[in-house]
Every structure is written in C-alpha cells, then in structure tokens.
Amino acid sequence: MATISVFGEGSPPRSSRSFRVTIPVDLPRGVCHCDYSSNNLLFKGDTLNALLDFDDANYTWLVYDLVNLMDNWCWSDGVTADWGGCARIVRLYSERRPLTPGEQSHLFDVHRYQIALDAAWFFDRGNAADFPERRRLEYFDSLGRAEYTYRLGLQ
Image 1: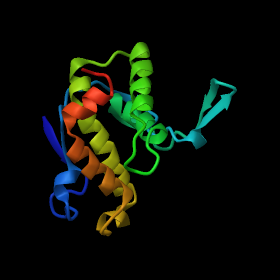
Image 2: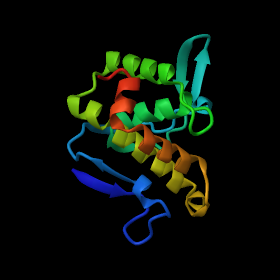
Image 3: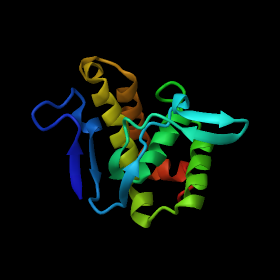
Image 4: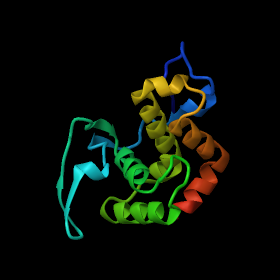
C-alpha cells in the first residue's frame, strides 16, 4: 500500500484528511485517456465515433478512466451523484474489462484520488474556504467505502 498526498507532506490544505488516500501499488495499470468530458466525445446518434484530446493521457491505474467517466457524467453540482448512472457505467465498463477484486476494493480510493487531483489542477481552490472538490471529498468521507461500493452495485 502507498499513501498518496496530492499536495505533498509540507503543504497540506486545511482539511488534509480529505486529501489523503491509500492505494495498493499493484493495481493494474496502463495508458488512460483521463478526460472524458462531453467535449472530448463525438457521437453520431447513440454511437461514439471519436475520442478527442489526449493531452491528459498518462500511465496510471486502469480504473482511473472508470472514475473519470463517473465523475464527468454522473455528478451535477460537485456533491449530488446519479448513483444509478454511476452503477450503469461500472457495469458497462466491467462487461468489457472485468474489475479485479483489488480494483473493486479500492475504487473508492482511486475516485477520491481523482477528485483530489482535480483540486490540485485548480490549485488556488485548495486555498479557498469552500470549493467543489472539497465538498465532494467531504461527501465521500461521510458516505464511506462500504456505501460507495454498495451504490455502485459492487457488493
């Protein structure tokens, strides 16, 4: 296991607890797109025709793309999730690439890491009293791993 702090040991944000995650180093890795916003997907009808904008692509945990899909398509205001939509994305993703037991156990952690990384992307937000990523991490902390996993249909 590795504990990751997006902001480094010397400069944690005010609620540093929310920005620390523990992720096993042996989760499957590969090249991921990492930016599934609607601007980067071209559809013709219901068919995905193109995936654009690979400037965020990198070698990371394969489930990073899964949490990025959920984050871009199932969260409306930073805290409110469409859990049915999230569960559907997990199910469809798993039909193509089944999640390992470790990925299922630590999807919560990778999702929290993705949110914290977004906060770091907009680093000035980390110094603000309130910002969307902080609210989402606090929501995740209150929700907990077991409830998150249940809502995604992974139990």
